[in-house]
Length: 174
Image (tube, rainbow, N blue to C red; front, side, top):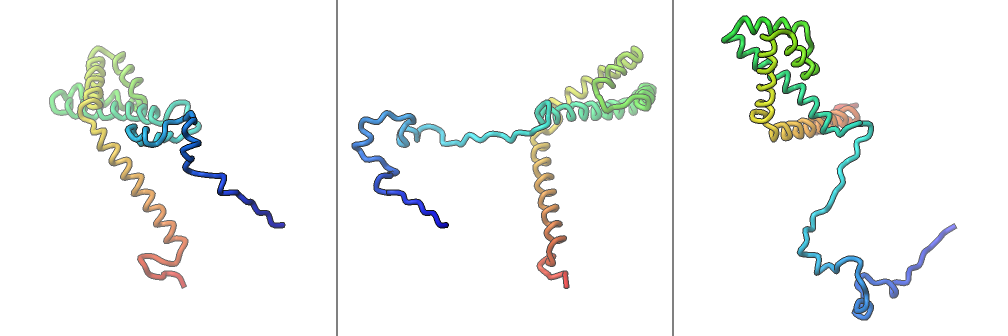
């Protein structure tokens, strides 16, 4: 069975006549009056299900632990050159304690001994300075975006090569 719909175009109009608009109250300002406002679109960000916190918060937590790891490496390198005894103490502590949780590592280091407390305070100072002054945040964003784009391109290219008979413009299948 075939259906058809008929619309009477004489009753529809994209541009109302002047008689219709004289007494009309606008819900929105007419176009000519809105041109001074920004024409930028308001886009909503993607919803990421399954996170108790935002993905950015999770990434920040990982970076926090990473900065602790970097600070320990920096302090260890400094100690190795000018205080070999403190360097050995830090190495022994590292053998017994995990760096996976930076705050727990520093809290445990502070409570080990007064000498270890000084090492922990130095690590806290270095991780803060590195995060605020030395870490290249713009470079992180650029590199992460580039890695995602390069990886996506490689995966899609590999898929096409695997599922087709053409590679580098030449037929490879019989």
